Image (cartoon, rainbow, N blue to C red; front, side, top):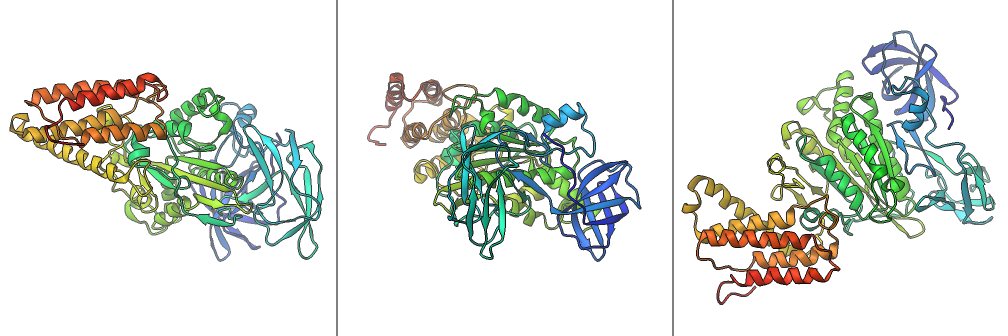
Length: 587
């Protein structure tokens, strides 16, 4: 691994003002928005990005501590946009928001990272086994594969750089060989005959979406998470978007970790954009030790972590989100299904608010920038399903957690997110305090994507939940004695659905992962019980019966679908219910 240095300088500027992590610079030669600059400080170069240009002045957000920078200091412009390196070696890595490998930085700097230290995102010394997939004379376009290298569980495509326009003719292509990412493995010519080189890696600006595909498709296929309340009631489609807002301690991080293990995707990218260091450390320690249910190997083999904790420079939070989504789009270009989990977008928005304040922009609600909605929308819109040039399908599913202060879903970040996502998984403090996990509120949450089960059955079950909640609220006022027996049974049905289906033991090998087939079968039985008219002599008799059924159903949840006992337990549950079926009533 080698250190990366600023690109050959073509222009310089002079610092005209310093305000926290924001510097104002006077320049003489043209610069670009989002261009990378380096502020000189005692022999070190502090990386920064241009965020505003006015006349001969530009403003840069510095991704480091700016202590020591002063008016009159020099800034060098690189003539390159804020970009990341894309190529083999990304998986299993842990990066900061600027794609610096944190383990290598720790080896060099120790426990406390030093300013101005940057390392190449991809190892320049590691060897890869390249196999060509084109021949001399073939015509290729941006995003087309010219060869492959094995990367862990996957076949990594080496693609024509995404920014190239038009058709190219292959003039030279390497035979199968072992090489580094810097090796030129192909040369192609455009229509004018200009020769260009292709290496194992390429760079791409993080704030520009990769669009080297044939067409964009509508997300329709379920992304099975094996979490019952999600797949049945509030599903997410591959290539869709969803958010998980909730108060601190309600289980957002745990739910994301469960999803990353069980979701039906190929690659998982976790962007810790401003999370507390303790939670990030827990993730870094646990993921290499977790077994991947799909492969039986380490989950880290198909995971990539972008890590910017709340103690790291605030400006890097924004970069970490865009770095993560760019890498997700890159693996989508290989025909893979990618899940991007951003935790937490609230802290990313807080970084935007801080930058907006330093730029002295007119504030919006709660001092967030007025353009907050458009920024959040542009991020989530980078998800989606695409058909690639070779006809294969790839997807990026984006799930962002939101941490509204006090669990207030009316605050700007949550509301801006709800306008663009396809599913809302709202966590409830009340359910979390009651230890009902996952603590997703079944009445407040929603999804625009199709469920695994019949939508009519889902709607009927949610109505029972809602009516049961109303009865529960009424009982708090008039007590059980003032509640009609039929209403009391309705309340028990709602509680039964909550206890045996909406809640799930994530630490149990069987109950923690409910497959699509299992959910369809179990929910069919639960729905049958919910829609059956039942007869009881008294409230106490009804309560005793439902408690008994709950225990049978919970035991049923812990029996593998393939086991003989599964059908036996199912029959036991249905027989117990049939004993209380009202006379003359069917299903």
